[in-house]
Image (tube, rainbow, N blue to C red):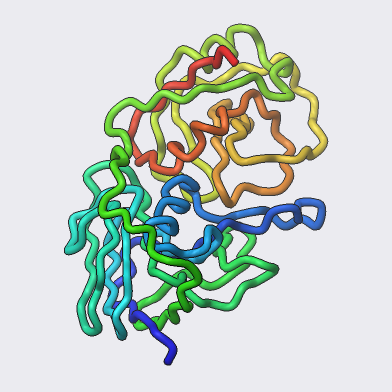
Length: 283
């Protein structure tokens, strides 16, 4: 018998995500995958699913699911008002509903079920890449999502003591990027001392930041170069774009810096209007 859950409401955006499509950049295919990798991995561990199992990534709550069969479910990442404990695996009986309100802090919540969501992979992944249009379509109302068979024992953890995403100012460590020399010394000093504001046109591709524009030392054109998650690219506006999971594979604007990889997952939880401080790492 194939188990499933039915989507009753989706909220602003709910997508299927897994560990992504690594190693295909040379073909023009980005990795994609869960924006907050730590929360994604925790969700699968808590229900005893494989580390690359598909979960739901919910942007600013609003998701409602009905269990068509008994399932074990968990939420991680941004803590939403809801009917199940957060960071704690909980049985959802057949006919019962899971409803997520708006999170008090953070932006993205991960919903995992034991066995993972058994949708068809595209190019080796079940992740929805919103920039490339690859993978399953965004989840819609009345979707019936099949649940896979468990592959390992439940770990027996009642609650993972993980802090909620930060409210207020968030500080990230950065390292100089390959095109640091395309900017003036004053521009670098401004990057690592000013306070930026997360704008409303941010998404899974990247976080757009509002602040004092950075002055370039060079004005010539740059051939397209490879990009990675955590890159801080400076378009002609002089205001940084901090790339997330669905970033383009290449780009023609200079990358002034990179966010230290251990801090990148926290970028996925930044909300519009939140203040962001970029500080030079001692690494």
